[in-house]
Amino acid sequence: MTTATTTRPLVFLALPQEGAARLATQFLLAIAGTLLLTLSAKTKVMLGPVDISMQTLAVLLIAAAFGMRLGVATLLLYMAEGAMGFPVFQGTPEKGIGIAYMLGSTGGYLAGFVVMAAIVGWAADRGWDRHPIKLFNAMLVAEVVMMVMGFAWLALLIGPEKSWQFGVVPFIVGDLIKVALAASLVPAVWSLLKRS
Image (cartoon, rainbow, N blue to C red; front, top):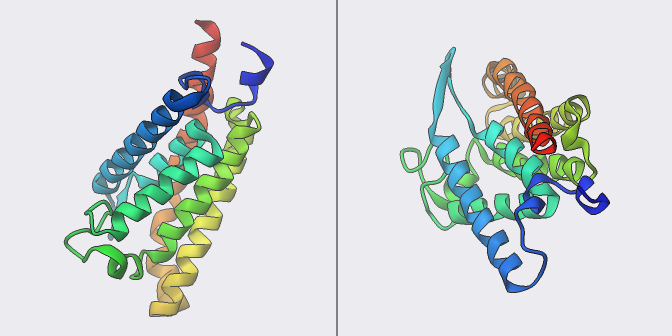
């Protein structure tokens, strides 16, 4: 492995070096990422009184594998799909679609996903995706920032006490498990690649 690839995220191993092929591959990866995000949003696990989706795990994995620029671009494309009315979010179409849904109770969390992708992607761009502890720390910071954004927006809608009770507390354990899982998986993939 050359020095240039040692500080690049996983996706760079599959990208053509330059030109239209590289751009087309990045575009296809972003579309594939939005499909994964949609699938993860619709995959629900019952944990107490709320449904917990696998979306946080998908955001973390996409950001760590794609890096900051492609990771954020993928999340922005996903948000654009949702804004256009595609049923890509957890509660769509049952609880509404488009901008109206995005400005509802999950709006802060959705915006937080983009920031989460930026933080984790930034860490991956610096080689932290090869070290479980460093990656866990970056992912934990990203998780906290996303939760703060979600809490703040929800608090504007229903008040801080209910926002904490229904928008944060039920998700803490599940999201910590997802952070630990993502922080273990990505370095494990790098280890397998080094052996092959």
